[in-house]
Image (tube, rainbow, N blue to C red; front, top):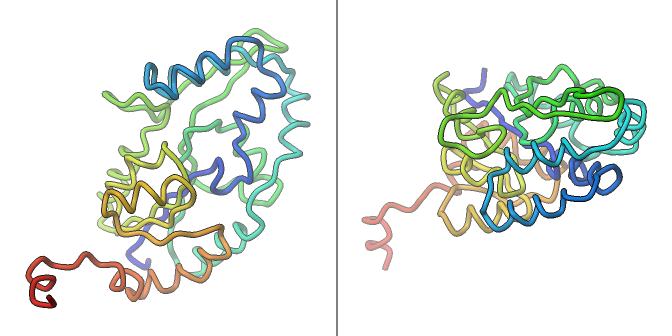
Length: 234
């Protein structure tokens, strides 16, 4: 063990595109856009939004599987997983997305054995209706998967925690980990909140950065400046 645990978002981080968005664009019945607008305006949480949207998906399992077979992941992610395992660093996928979709997509790369925390997608009224449940929700959290709770659980093992993510569902967890590899909107959040992070464009960057994180050099470069030192340097 290296003393670190990796928590990694899926949609937009591991995957090239957001899975639920692609499903709604193709199979969503009218009404899902209104839920999306309510979520973006803060009137509902992501769990309520996604539960309603999944109920509006009109697709057979065969159509779902065919669609998922057309979705891709970052080309360097398998190498990153291999590197993490060689360095004895546990990695867990933590997503506010759909477990079935994540397993299906990762399975094409031989990675469906990665530990996963995500919403559960299951058939409702066969053959075309679906329902969402959230086994990783937490009291007081409006997300389907409470990434804060997962991060807190990881820290109890006594290891430091690295978060790799890209968007709003990662904001809360970023405040509770030791370091962040950030993409897209998460970069601005980390910068504004003073969270130790490095920006990445994908897992090619992460491959180069992970050894430096584990040997302590990256963390030292991005350690917060102590107030006394800051004054002394003026």
